[in-house]
Picture 1: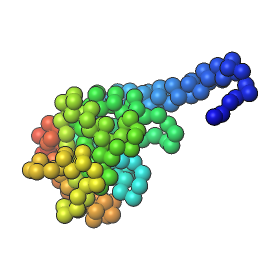
Picture 2: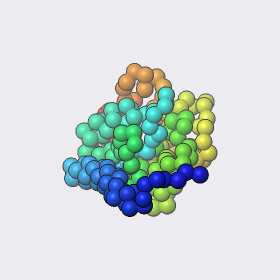
Picture 3: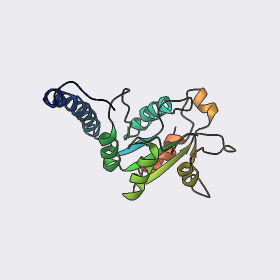
Length: 193
């Protein structure tokens, strides 16, 4: 057991500064989110993905965001530095968005213990009735590691596909933006890409 030689009052003296930093991080993410929503896109979609690891779709998400913005669709990506708290920004973003885009990599849906892990994002989006747009990012013959993704992409549910070849070529697959625009009910989804 660990005993501190410092009196309790010492901790109370420094504790507010610890919590102040945490609140500043959350406020910073909230401000970023608010600024993005103020850009006035016709629709906003939330990007749900696993960050880090070899199959991270982060780079793909930013490329897709750029293409969607050309079609007047905002893609909310909650991307933070290590150690930052994102929980409030994630759930606030999901709630404010018109739809929920799943970047279905092999590790999507893992319960990491983080309150804003993809399995929790998915559960929240389903509970509040968000329209889901599924992008399968593993090979058709492969399977997802975690049950929430296997259930989500199972059966005959329509999903879009962004294969490894397209990710390696650094290109957004032809037709993907059009299909997402159609699913988001923006401009009928006509035209390319």
